[in-house]
Image (tube, rainbow, N blue to C red; front, side, top):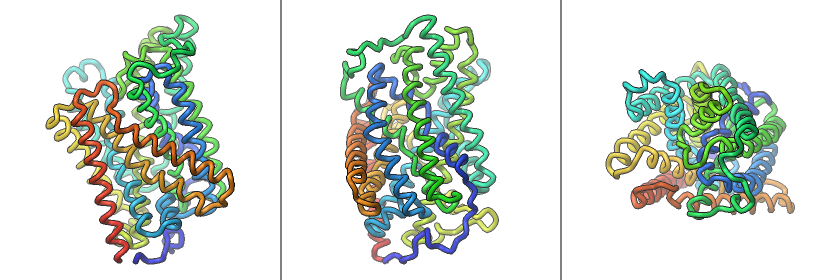
Length: 463
């Protein structure tokens, strides 16, 4: 049986580096990603309805749940610690394992998005001499290990990237919305928003399946709770940070989706560089022809900051499990100088590197799969694995908080939205050429992750 010591009760001393402003900026840069606007825009005008449904059915229950649990139980490790409190060490470890390992798939997919935007910003002569795929592979590997080094140094010094990186979210979002309005006033909308156009049509199931990515776009408000012992007055700061950043997040996604559909037809979008493409086209229509490359660099900055934020936060989960001794104690070690969980950060970097290289050189070359389809598998695998802990999260709420009507409503709504989103991930995205390869890769990798987590949980329980 695992030791009874919880992360929150551990004598280990953390540096309380995050204040309300830092939590708000951390949430924005870690959660808001304009690539979800480009992905949702595949559905065209119905994406606006899907965004509203995602905010009502998923985001509001999530915000209420995390705020309530963070206020009552500000434990280091957040969701892992809450699940352990509510359901015991086995479920705590399985939840924490999925929460951690999904990021191993998330980091390469996010850095592929960043690489695509940096490639767009390269001067024409350089881009002509470098293969886009070769550039993406090299960029992802360098950025990944730079992230490891930055997080070993720690939040007190490394939070500058998150704070500056928020500009890479706010400025492109503002430019997208501003140019969208100007393009609409001057040239009209490139997409019809008539009432009948707001209803999904054509390949309805494929379009509706994008809703899972929209729900995932709102996920992550538990990030500060993973580092509760590094937040000043976490019982008040975390709920307030969620409220402020949540309003901003919803506005960016909804208005930004309208703006991109006004600027460019859905069929013309390249998802991995769609925002930069849309702003480049919209900028040309309003007299700013060089806007695309500038926005691409801003999006790359935001992506790097978001990657760094999640990389550091995710490492706190196996660290907390190491302190609890449900994982090897070495995982609970802190760096002697920087007081950071350097062991889990390095292990995380190694695993993310292996997954990325496997996805590119085995999945793409071995299954007649395009880089976009490998990206789709990484994104949807991330969503499926990440949402397993969310099932635990919403199940924890009635057990750890006051079980009133609002509590049960938030728990049931969030649980149902999460389960539906997970199921929709198994619908192949529009344009998939190798459906069998897509399904096999997604199902087998999901089962592999769960089996390893189950084995780790069983071993920890025997301990």
